[in-house]
Image 1: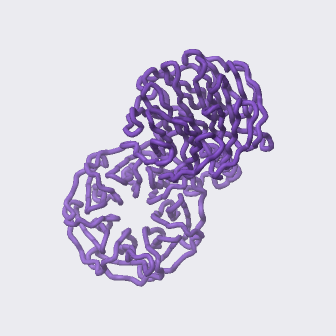
Image 2: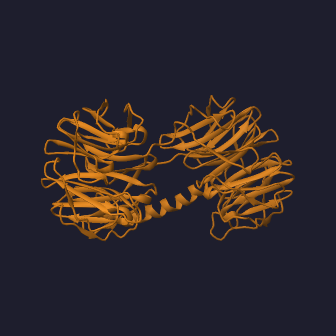
Image 3: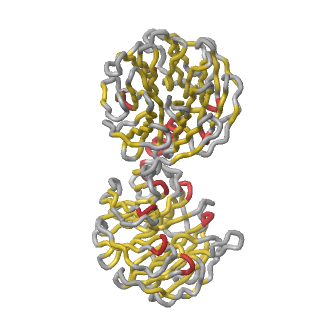
Length: 594
């Protein structure tokens, strides 16, 4: 069983506050670089999982819409076609039928988990949980919504006993029990019970904490919720707030093989044989777990970022990968010829005309692509193991020989020359992007980024050590002869850009350096201790991005302002084109501004 995840509730609050702030700041609404929109979230969520008829079925929301996965053993999963793009919240099995519920009254049914049919629910409210018992499907959701169906195809809305959101429902011992969260800050969480799914009775709840999951087993109902809340009731009418070994949000609870298992935020896993004595188990993940079920001798828990855990006994857990479906991290982005091109993990190449809709391109390599540039009618991407790819149209890519096996971290084009830099002081140059020549850098330190401005190539990097680290700065007028410059920082330098007569370099622990000539550098206050990975200049503005979704902007490179970011994912690169900034990062995250 799965409820509306705590993550989603917290995110909703954040989004509402952000929206309010946005509306209040009308004067800066159109300023490029000030307001950012999450175009492609760098994560996918598995929201719910159930087991029936020898099959595990999980539902998922992702940047491309909803998805449904099936597995016979809980380890190998197959994506099935979904007839909807609506967010799917929960899935249940009963009477030979799988039933999925989701946002805006979405209901899907399938006899085998493979072929799915959309059903009319008669409501536009979000449906958050569904169960089956006593020959009846019961679905619950926002605003106290309760629907029932004998066959999963025809649904009837029942009289509302509450306006509170109902977040989970189960059946046991001849009784349906629905739980949720209070619509009032001072109200206790709702608990409703029904013998027939039609007539519902409100029970006294001993907590104000939202209840996200409920299950029945061992002659006991167990409900779980925020701040580690555990409630127990032998008959569903009288509930007791029970001691919990965790403060983590508990999202879901199930019963199987003589064991209750509850899961939640920070990868929390609790188990109990009787519902009274609970023990925290070692979890292989810190990701929020959304749902847990039992079947075929296996507990399966699912959660954020496509997390899947399995356990034969509820105590020993293993993490699995949802192969082929995790979003790949993006490291760099460029805008040329009315096209954004982003590159990243596993040879990922994406293109977009508007920064909003993106198309994956075949790169022909599984190596990480770290940087991309354009010059002389040619796109050039570089990456791990000396990988160099070229393309005339950003669609069809050709591998070129680099002559090195060292990772290449950055590439730029100016003054008729491509310059690529990388590990152990590697510098390569090329007039045509096809034939590359190694150049002496004079350093064995790793170079992370290279830029051109005011007749000068500037490369930055670090010595790769932690306790005695130092920033590295090299300059060259021709890309062939390089000179080391004095760096005023011991921090690692990760990115460099040129604009408005100024070089700006960024790096670890919020480091920002500026220079008019590439030789003399001054540290600037960034206002953050987060790592800064990339920097770009466009439309009269420097934009720097980095860890925890950090976004900084500056008109002059000296005074920096932190912007509200819609993501906590690490941002690696940023570019300006077509009137917008585009930032990219881990797990395929893409942001745009405005």
